[in-house]
Image 1 (cartoon, rainbow, N blue to C red):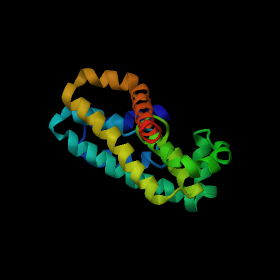
Image 2 (image 1 turned 90 degrees about the horizontal axis):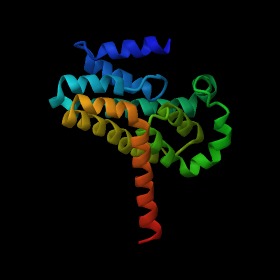
Image 3 (image 1 turned 180 degrees about the horizontal axis):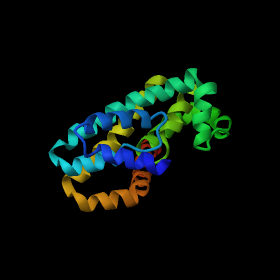
Image 4 (image 1 turned 120 degrees about the vertical axis):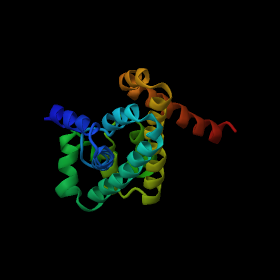
Length: 193
């Protein structure tokens, strides 16, 4: 089933409805869909490199709107919709374990999930279910998702096909390294300076 979803998503990149498909996949990926929008973003930027900013913007905006849907699912539909989605990803028991911690540090979690391959939808639902401050949630989503999609699109624009293989192979490592540097920078500013 997952392979069919992946193949279907990839086939959208070659159609005249690619931008609508990119927006749709970006939207639902932030709350329920298992395939990341990168599988559409990558071939679209490679096909039309000069439109990289437009594609990254579509991806980012739709993803943030979808994240708000995930937040609503968590806040208002956790028992009926949110819990089964989390169960699908094997995270239903993690909710109780991290709810208290999450209310304190959840903004960092959302930022981490927004830029890494971690299932972002899990934290959008957690955010609504635990009542994470909506302003914090939106701010870190804009920063994280914007960073992720604009960086991927720019790298594809700048370096073309060779960077595609590098990004696909090392996406998790690259974004994890970036997060370590980002968080380390905040810690250094707070405690050192």
